[in-house]
Structure formats: structure tokens, C-alpha cells
Image 1 (cartoon, each protein chain N blue to C red):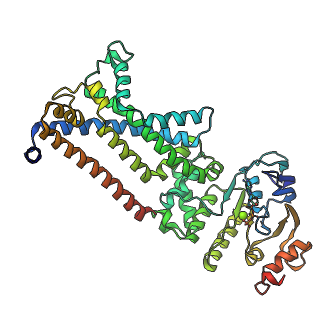
Image 2: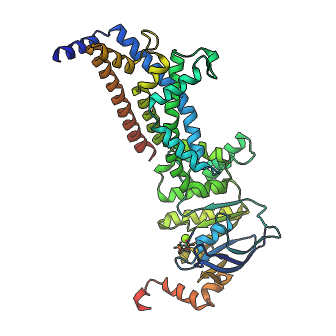
Image 3: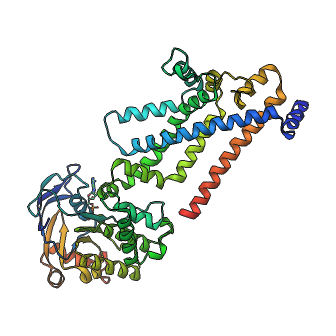
Length: 239
Length: 231
Ligand SMILES: Nc1ncnc2c1ncn2[C@@H]1O[C@H](COP(=O)(O)OP(=O)(O)OP(=O)(O)O)[C@@H](O)[C@H]1O
Ligand SMILES: [Mg+2]
């Protein structure tokens, strides 16, 4: 399934190119963070990889195969929360797999334990807070033991404590053997989590390299502008 | 008028046995039809919501149209099916409560299917990417979303019961309005009114209204409770 080679990937739904020839190679280890301004196509890229959008042109090569051989999971920015118990919200994701009911229960209990929602198992999932919902979504993705986990802004609008909890879980999922590809606008989070950074702008990958190098010496003008724009003392009108 | 109303209340207060029998049969027939209609209508609606096939649009239009089908037409249709020369004539069901259950089921299935299709499809629009990525089959998705939408669906189901209990044309045709055997509230009201026995008609009308009112109150209460309990 890895390395994943993306070549010339384009997405132009209404003639207007959102992605315009994305070239990228991802190894099967570590955490890759995709950065880029709003509307750069980060979400679109994740959805294309998940097979949820039809690519215009370009090629995906999953370690020599046209389709991923391992399991792929995705946590959406607004994860689905069914009007069922917390437990049921995780358990149903295991139904497509050939697992015994006992094994399904064991896995559900284990991931709920690991995201700190074990005591909430019987509660209605719709009553969870934003941070708890995000942990629930991570538990659901974790339960299927994915080889590739796609996370779309997993901590948008979470407070620092909830953000830290999510980051801890993400690291644990990586340690469990999942490659992680995530987006965020939280640069602190990117420095904390990323092994490598992909910078996406104007429909293309502008930079891809080790995280510390990216933050120390961004190569492209677009990345420099993006990073400076994120600094709190740089007001938008001062640019 | 005041006199008849007084008589009607007297009938109710004395728990008149004729009245109780008619009310009892009404409830048995309509609840049976509702049970069957739910069993068929919910999966049908949910499946239409999550599946994509040629002719799906036509199927949805057909079901929406059937929802507004006049009950007498359903009555005639079921009559033809159950009559001696019809395909199900051998069962000898015509002019029995079973025939009435069949007719009301035919009335209720499109209503429940149409409403549940709409409700489940709304949820499906939001969740389809996640559910398909998780790898659920269409049927697994359909049943999961039925569970997710169960409170909204219970309201659709109660609307079905309302339709079954209040229709008169279908049960009249396939049941025959036989005293003590196939006479239900609506057919009794129609008959007693035409005979001039307004007291019984009004008493039955009051019971019917009370039942419909209670159903709506139950639906409202259920949704309010579910909103607090499940968010
Ligand atoms: N299915 C689609 N059909 C047509 N256009 C789309 C579709 N999905 C996204 N777009 C467009 O693609 C562009 C990029 O969207 P995308 O959501 O990928 O941005 P993003 O990088 O994730 O931005 P943000 O940081 O705000 O989340 C937007 O202009 C959006 O309107
Ligand atoms: Mg996005």
C-alpha cells in the first residue's frame, strides 16, 4: 500500500481547478500534516485519497497497486454522530468486518477505553461535547485498525485541553501502526505532531519536507506568507 | 341537538356494549394494519433512500402519489384481489376483518414508505461518505439510519395509524360493515348518521377524535422526550 505515489492529481469539478496537478510521495510511517490556506483543496485531497470524490486526471499508486490493500479510515471535520449510544456509534463500524460478536465487543471496549470514553459508553452520543465527539470519531476510526488514517482538522474549535487529548490519541494510533495524513490550521499542532509537512496552495504541492526544515526555512513564497500570516502580531491589513 | 349530544354522552358513560365492540374492532384492525404497514413501509422507504437504481425516481413518485390515493379506490382494488374470481379469492377473506386489515395495510404502506424515505434520505445525504467508507452495505446503512431516525419515524408511523383509523371507504367495501363482525367506527358513523341515529354516530365520532388526539399528543410527547434524552 506504501509508498503512496500521487502523480498529476487534478480535481476540477466545474472547469475551475481546485487541485491542478498534485505530485506527492508518502511513506507508510509517521504523521504527515497538510498545511495550506482556506480553500487550497486540503479536504478535497483527503477525500480523493479516500475514494469519495472522482479524480479528474492523475494517478494514485498504492505501493504498486491501483487500490489500497490495507484498511483506510477517515475522520471528517464534522464527524457523523448517530442518535445512538456512544458504544453503538463505534460498534457499527466493525459490522462490515468478519468479526465474532465477542471480538467486536472487545475492540469497541478497548478503543473507548483508550480515548477516555469508557464510562460514557451508554450515554447518548448526541449529548457529547465537541471534544468528546471528536474522540468518539477517533475511536470509531481506530477500531477498524486502519493502515492509513485521514484526519480533516481534527481539533478545529477545540480548547487547548481537548486539543492535547486528541493529539495524544493521534500519536497512539500512529504507534499502533497507522500512517497518518492530517490537515490542520493549528501551526503549534503541526510542529508538535508532524514528521513531514506538505504545503498545498494554488492547486499544487508547493513544498514537501521534514517538519523542522519547513518551519525553519520555508522554501516557497506562498509558504512564507502563510506562516507569517499565522503570527498573531501580523494583522491582515499590515500585509 | 342538545338532546342528541346528551344521549351521545350517556352512551359513552354507560360504556355501551355495541359502542365498545365497534371501538375494539377498529383498534384491532387499524393496529394490525399499522404493524404490517410499518414492517413493510420502513424498510422500503429506507432502502429507497439509500439505493441508486434505474427507475428509482419513478418509484418515489409512485409511492408519493399512492400516499394520496383515495381509500375507496384501495377498497375496490383489494376487493378485486380478494373476490371469488380474484387471485386471492381462494382464501375466502372478503367481508372479514382480515380483508379490512389488508386494505388498510395497502393504504398505510405508501404513507410510511414515503415519509421514511424522506427522513432517512436526509440523514443519508449527510452520512453517505462516512458510511460508504466504513463499508456498510446498502441494507446495513438503511437499518442503521432507521435506528438513527427512529423518533422522527415514530411520528410518521403514528400518522399512518391516523390514516388507517379515519378512513371509511376501503373498510366499507372489503368489510361490508356487517354488524358485530366487520363494523368499525367510521363505517358505523356513516351508517348511523344515514339511519338518523345521531347519538351513536356522535359518540363514536367523539371516541375517534379522542383517539386521534391522543395519538398526536403521544407523538408530540415522544419527540420532546427524545429531544431531551438523545439530543
Ligand atoms: N465536491 C465538490 N465539488 C465542487 N467543488 C468543491 C467540492 N469540494 C470542494 N470544492 C471546492 O474546492 C475548493 C477547496 O475546498 P477544500 O474544502 O478542499 O478546501 P480546504 O483546503 O480544505 O479549506 P479549509 O482550510 O477552509 O478547510 C473550495 O473552493 C470548494 O468550494
Ligand atoms: Mg477543509
